Image (cartoon, rainbow, N blue to C red):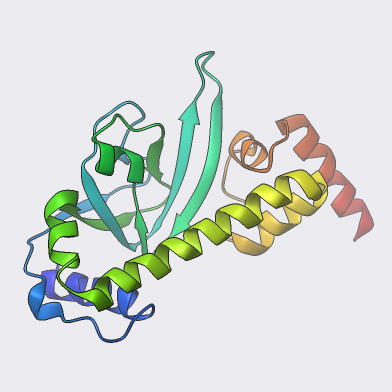
Length: 196
């Protein structure tokens, strides 16, 4: 894989939030993670002190309860920063798994050196803060949807946001993402087909 191309993708990603980042201050080397469908960046309970940038592909965040039930928390499409902020900042075990849903490529940096170099450039820090704002806003909207929208509307929102997944993911993963059972999802799909 072309390291220069991957670094350019990282730069493009952050420059959408602030165009004036001084990349000459950022000299860290990165690891490349080539993931096949089903591979994991890390698993729930592992330590992960790295900041990941997904340069291509699509991943799913999921956690497993004490009773063994699997919950899909979110999906992330490239290009995007992914990972566990809690795990990398506080050096705690991860609370979820990140799994590739198709062949994907990510690069990663050790968090503390990444943060140290990023903090030398105000524009880079502002770009990172703006990226975090988009994450918080998305999370706020999703949490509101789980409370205010019907299960049917949440399913339609999922189909709109992830059209490439609606026919390929197991029902259980979609159902857990929108907060219902696979049986309820089957009913919603049947109802939508009847209404067409």
